[in-house]
Length: 180
Length: 245
Length: 194
Image: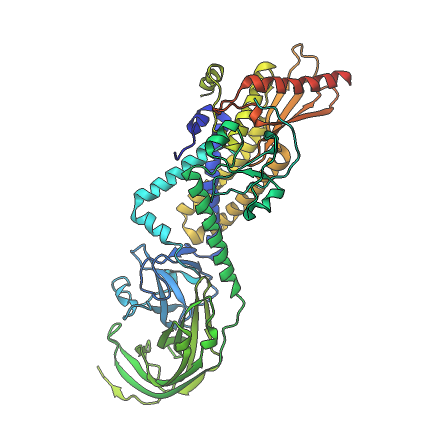
């Protein structure tokens, strides 16, 4: 039996304040996760400090489902050979590839070209139509740390949304009902 | 109701998810009967155990550790596994954090040909195109440890032109996955990628060639190391092929 | 919701999973609260719980504000606001844990003994309890603060939960009440002696 006996009875037995506290506890767990994520955003300077590798274009370095930690410090210039995560305008999916060529002007504007290790051609085909180079504003961050396999959970949850809702519902119910 | 006899005895509450033993308080028993297998002789000092079935636990109203349902066991097992794996991954990542990955390397540019042709990869404007041959000698075998998944070795050409104050082009790269392949001693290698300038500023230019490697760990921080030894050489002052519009 | 639970308590005893330590503790706490409030007709004072609710509510509010602001003004522009919100949130978390450990200290009910005549200032009764994980010893502590003299008197007992729960997991109020009443009267007599 997955649920203990009387677990929902406890919910009915709570008075107003206890029920409010349960809801607030649930809210606090969500808020803590949110604040940690926003805190990471601020610390790393990147709008998406942790990304999951979605394709196999950087094998054998990164496989589908690996987790990457990004930073996006503006003072640190992009250099060739770095692994950058960028978003093409018009498409929401971040791409993780390596910088192949870089040209920088006196005033600081940079344009660069990327290529995936496992691809035989560079990324010009992936950029927006008419776009030949990437600029700093397309970059979400530079990969600084790496964890294998952890991102598979996110991939499963995105491919099977029912699974995601089931997990979230179970967690939510557990927190709401369980009195500390 | 059971009459109780208070006793001060410490007890250890370890969830025994590999068996169904109950840890209970001595005050509920009349006599002690510890089982003397080797695995619990240590715990004996802290708690008295008896192999009890769940029915016996229930009838004696003993406060048992709750390991008798599938949900409980799988919950404890999964969380324990995840915790241990997280700790091991963290330890692995930290263990190689402070190792040095610099090694001496030697790059020699051998032959350069310059062309001035339409750049078919961008917008067909007339750009300088270089074909470079070079030697690479570096011994990277010492860099491989338990936390290195692969080394990404690449050769950069760095120069400045009138149009762009700073340019970098990757001319060649190689992925090394095993220690045996890490001794690079290559002569007269042709460039792997098109060496286009963004403009036409390669004639008479001092170009610096250097090899760098990207250490990709099994878990942890990604590192990019450039070899300190570089090779500067002068590009030719004339084009081999020129296309005029 | 509370009305229904009152009726239930009168009609049938509260049932918990007797192997779940925290559920047992909560049920026993509720039983003790019922004794203090209903038997002695004390008034429950919610200021302690309200303080905790306020801290939690403000923390969640700050987090929601940060979420909204970041959604309206995407990341690089919202950086200062985010920094403020994140540090405020974690300060409130720290305050909350300080509040729970030092101000609340496991107190689950604060009851005010009002003098019906209205002359004598009120006595404040506080009950706190502890039940360790995988343990069966329920430790109940009752503190009474005398309204007139300001003295603080404490009494406590440690009983196994087996004394109050039967085999099916029902909390037996008839067994809880005499223990609590005994403790209560011992504190009252102590006061009268002094």
